[in-house]
Amino acid sequence: MTLTERISELLQAMNNGIPERESCIQLAFLATVTNEPFFVYGRSGSGKSLLTDRLSQAFKESHVLKMGRRQQTFPNKLNAFDLIIFQNFNPADEESKENLQIALHDRENAALVVSSDQRPESVLSRAEITDHITLTVALPDSLSPDALCELLQNLGYLENVHIPEDLTISPEERKQWNEDFKKVELSPETLRVIGALAELCDQNDIYVPIRKWLSLANIVKAIAHFNGRKQTVLNDTLFLGTPIWSKAASNNVIVSSFNDIIKSVMFSECPEVLNSGFDAQALYNKVKTLLHSSNNLYETKMFNNEPCLSYRITIAGEPAPLYVPLRYIETDEDFNPYNELRQIETRVRCNYHGTSSCTISIDSSVKGVGLRSSMPRNNSTPGKFEDFASLPSYILRENDPEIAEQKRIKLEECKKEAHAQMEKQTKFLFALRDLYQANKVYRKDLFCITKMFDALQVELRNIFEANNAIANKLKETLELFKNTDKQTAI
Image (cartoon, rainbow, N blue to C red; front, side):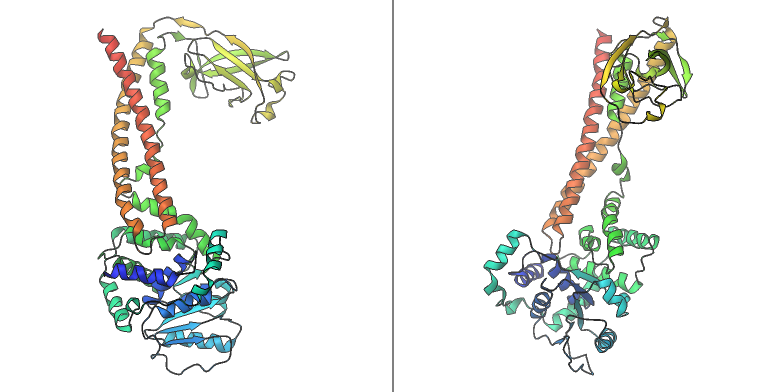
């Protein structure tokens, strides 16, 4: 049996009969095996004692010191213990508080667990041990209906769980493993994640002692070691994006930002993938219009820094000028023109329907009042649109050679852009495919946080599909050029 298989079976045995607590037991195990002090938080009845009992059973011939709320003598020497548990800790009890501080400083190689039904930020602050606790394990307040039914059906088994002796961990093994953890190399990706987290903490005034960063990095190494690796991978860091950070405010900042940190590291070799929202549809429409529109020269004027066709309509006896960007002429898309205040007039909708005549529709709410009298409502949500007029465009010259040349130049630019973007999207698609396939193997890893992992994989797939849609539209655009070249050759 390999070490990975053994730890997997041990974790399953520890979790038997305790539904929806897998990630909590895994974190507690990792902290214990690396001798890192941690805090277990949960309401009364959430399973804190059950977790610590299973934890103590996982270690062979372990000497456990349990300190509860009842008065008991605290030993002078702690080096005889492998695990020290402060159950139902209350920082208001000065003696318990003093004993805990002594244990933190004199425990040598003993793992230390503090459990309480009071919130970690309150307990740790009042006990003056915030900077000494590596992580917090927060137990859920309740169970799902299915998990509750499972628990009720296995109550007898729950109270009589026995972890097989050959799976339990001896003190010598734990000592050797901690030496092995030191030999595991932190990968560049892991270091970038930790670096980005440290930067995030600095920006949000979240104090994390260097000792804590070292301890968390050691847990990352432990995960890699138990999975049979000599170097860490990105998947080993996922627990850092869970609520382990003691304070609710810290958890909110880190958990909400962690997904972006992971993605930035995943795409560090190709960061453009994350913001590659190229508007392939707009390029397609532009090429289609250039290829199928006339070379007519229309009468325009510069308005809002672009050539526009000018129209004047009368609504409720009141004339109102409208300015239509030349780029829309002979297209078939709906758009809003500019009004005289150089704003987009949302209450008027236009469409050329592939011709040089502009079809105008107006919001029914302005029929009786006009556009000017209701200018303050310019950005309000439009009501029902009704056909109003169809106005022609004044042609200065048909088949103007200068217009034809301008279109030729624009088409050449569009063709180059389509080819360049196609090459870029192809590169993105290969990178996304390879990344998705490479990540798949880590889902079965020990300590993998599957919910977070699956969400990342879904996001990878969504990014792939978005880029694939862009590539397909670019392919359609290039087909427009091919069809035109064929027609020209004929």
